[in-house]
Length: 277
Length: 155
Ligand SMILES: Cc1cc2nc3c(=O)[nH]c(=O)nc-3n(C[C@H](O)[C@H](O)[C@H](O)COP(=O)(O)OP(=O)(O)OC[C@H]3O[C@@H](n4cnc5c(N)ncnc54)[C@H](O)[C@@H]3O)c2cc1C
Ligand code: FES
Ligand code: FES
Image 1 (spheres, rainbow over the protein chains, first blue to last red):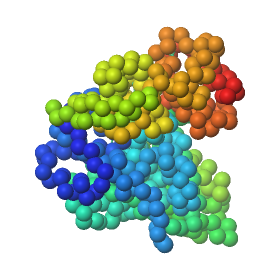
Image 2 (cartoon, each protein chain N blue to C red):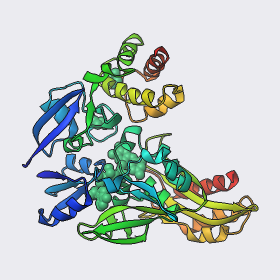
Image 3 (cartoon, protein in one colour):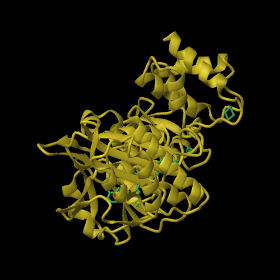
Image 4 (spheres, rainbow over the protein chains, first blue to last red):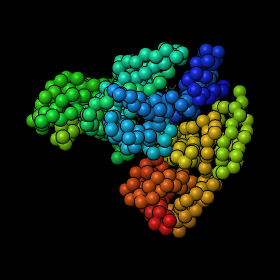
């Protein structure tokens, strides 16, 4: 349980004071993961830094080439924001499969990423969008590929105090498909999920990227299948692509599903996605 | 434990109080303000019994820290009647027998308030989608759906 919580409204104030705080400090965004760890007694940090109202982290904006989505943007905002609908529609599509409306009003995209869960719906969409993540440490920024620092469940390569400032998605006219299998129709953790972004030029697939959730220790890309689909007619390539994607993954059996069922879901999802194009 | 000077608005009234920063919004509402209408069911975001409106959006107060309500507007079941649909929903839940033990009812009414204020023409399917985070162990849901649908039609 934290001894206290510091609330910040600007990055400037955060960087000014952060080093003076006790060293077992942690960022608090929406709290949907962190506050539960408090009830379970799992959290041992003494200070939480509430970053959910820092203006910069709530921005969604564009420049010539990219859109920027701040880390404290709530999941519910992804659904109808015009920039996200236009340039990152995979993120808008993930919303209706993501928990319940009230969780979506609280949980942030940055928290979803930081939690590094293999079933994270926001990360699934960001990976298919080939997003980059902007990290900030004491006002020095670095930008890296979205999956490059995700090492496994709850394992993410962030330096001490390094803050996820936001996500960068390049403005590409790609379409997207988001699919998620849960134990019920709504409000559940993924048994498996698939997100695909692509262009269709004269009946041929171009610029395909496919991400998968809950089939590996973190969200992964199906790179061999992506390569195979490049330049192919979607319905003709279906059988081979579904076979390939099964060869690319080796999911575990756990309380949510079995390895075999997860394989089947992924190949059925890909087949449905290709049929729908 | 360091104190936090919390300033917010609860059911239209300004509140200024020093609290332990380790309090969840739910504990603040029930134990500090004594507003017992907001319930704790699961404490994990699954049941919706603890829902309140924060700046007009339904949130699970068991997952929000009280500090996060600083400078925000909170509406609990005790204040919902002042809002469009609020009183109508309460009346409609009674008329349609959408309440048995009543433990889930405050959460359902808060969720319904958000559904209807965002989309006054919500269809039955949209109402069901909007209630994905609310569990009731007594009534069987149909009466709840009907109550919300009727409240919507009356406005
Ligand atoms: C009932 C329930 C249902 C859920 N359903 C789903 C679901 O369907 N799909 C899904 O993907 N997830 C789901 N989740 C998981 C959860 O909602 C997400 O992982 C959420 O997005 C976390 O965001 P948050 O803002 O609440 O994070 P917090 O709880 O505030 O933080 C989580 C972690 O991230 C760190 N952190 C947060 N922001 C930053 C930042 N900007 N920089 C550095 N570190 C940061 C925190 O220190 C903490 O360790 C569910 C959770 C609950 C409780
Ligand atoms: S008590 Fe908060 S969702 Fe169950
Ligand atoms: S009326 Fe008893 S839980 Fe809903």
